[in-house]
Image 1 (cartoon, one colour):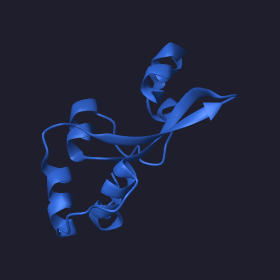
Image 2: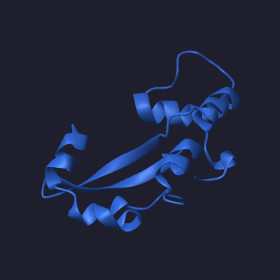
Image 3: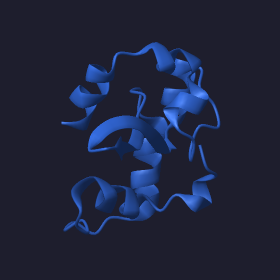
Length: 99
């Protein structure tokens, strides 16, 4: 996960919703929720080849994601680079994730 100062929590919300949050809360609150939630979370960008999903890039993860998956320092990397078993995953799995 990138250092806390490189993650602007309102931009996380903007990324997820496509808009600025209507409620103005201190960004430290969002960061704290993200960092301390029990559920692992990874926000990713799907990559397409010839119109079909082929891979994705981790944009950011939280500490619980790292703890639950064992994957560390994956932000900015493709899943195919960070998770070697991925090359054996059926492509219809990516289609499901892309919807």
